[in-house]
Length: 356
Image (cartoon, rainbow, N blue to C red):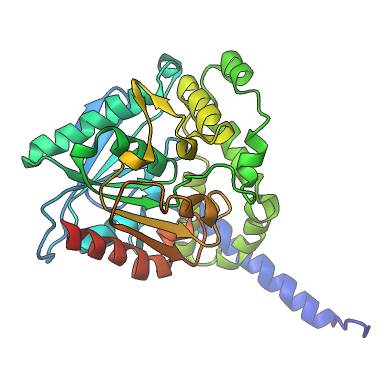
């Protein structure tokens, strides 16, 4: 092996540049304005307990607006402004540009008063009342649903229970088979004493779940990204974007204890969504009862919801119109990457417009 030649003058120059970049970065960090949570104009049209239902303003110049509104159902475990994180990285903005009339549920931040909320409360209560609000506001019988991650699993359950209220369903990075061999998160969950955890803690702290997710890729998610951050510190716009992402990552709501108990036991440990053993309220969830057209989108490099976990949906529903879309990226990149803005949201808009 040849020795590595390190010239003192070159090393001194690199150290000087590094120090200058850090100095400029500290200045940019101190001067960064308040980090916003979503960039597209919206209005709260409905509130209930912690929940807020947003309606997004239609952009100027968009023709042929879809007459069937689209409701986005996000996961409980993170904040939904990931879908609208910045001007040039916004799933919401992309959907609006295709003519969709977009609504979104913000589940809010549960506290100890909400520890007894169940999946029945969330799906046949909050979600169903949001759907009815939109149906009444538009004078229509059925709306379109877009379920993201855990929200996609919720949307599948909702469609199975209320098929008469949904025209089309889009699922993004949605777990269906919770026991694929490459699902590290599921492997960790299998032997968790969920009853002891919930009975002891009540609600599950968002910080606990957040560090669980980060631990799936500890080097890249908790160390390397901060080393790489130095390379962008001298650009104020990139600093702002980095801080937006950091805000979202660590803005993790607590989880209502009983909902967490049921979701972990029935979906992860018993794999009940594909086994047909999930019961919500008085309903047994049978995926064959999901009969509306389905667009199922998954990410090929997803470490939280492996592709096989999402692709398991194919052939398990009662839909005669099933489409899959594979995105060459990860769980977060499917919302925020430049490639996603060019490929994913236009594909969703086109698919919905053809069926509405």
